[in-house]
Amino acid sequence: MEQTTHSFEWTPKSVWFQSFAGHRSFVDSPDQVIAFYGFEGDGIPPAGDERMHLRFDFSAQQPPANLREVEIVVCNFSFTPMT
Image (cartoon, rainbow, N blue to C red; front, top):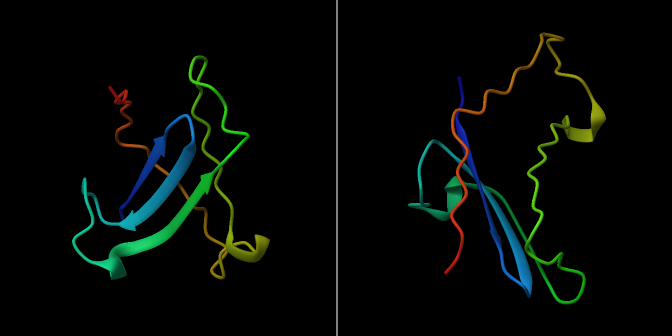
């Protein structure tokens, strides 16, 4: 099983998302980064009634080449408010 780690940083002025290979709390090397995206500016939802939603999509909306079932297991989820 291949493990990945995903993190979000949400502030009043920005939202940053990072996805990286392995099960870790930080990235040792840039080649571990699978995806990184950030947004800054107007339109950031205010803190208060947050909900986490995960969406699982196939690349180019194609099923796996081997047509086998795919499973995602969330082993841990934590929320750490910024102080």
